Image (spheres, helix red, strand yellow):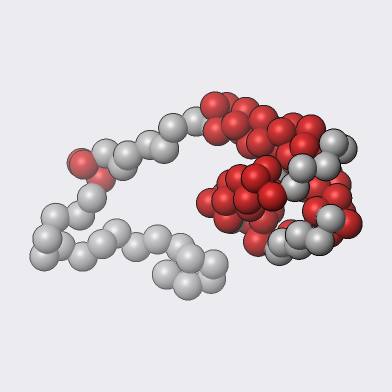
Length: 97
């Protein structure tokens, strides 16, 4: 998910890419990181306009900062998992048990 600064950059990039004849799915761009990185690489190689190249580079930099600032995924501790054959502990999911 993009933060506000990245969403503004993505919107500006979408408009600039549309003007040069290259469109992409902005909703998918903001939700799917792999799609966003592939789109940025494609736009960097295809668009050679002076105003758009710095915008693409700034968006890529913003994405790389997000990767370096995000905490590493934590592994679940092995002691918390139920043993085979034991029922899983009851947890609330909305109004259901």
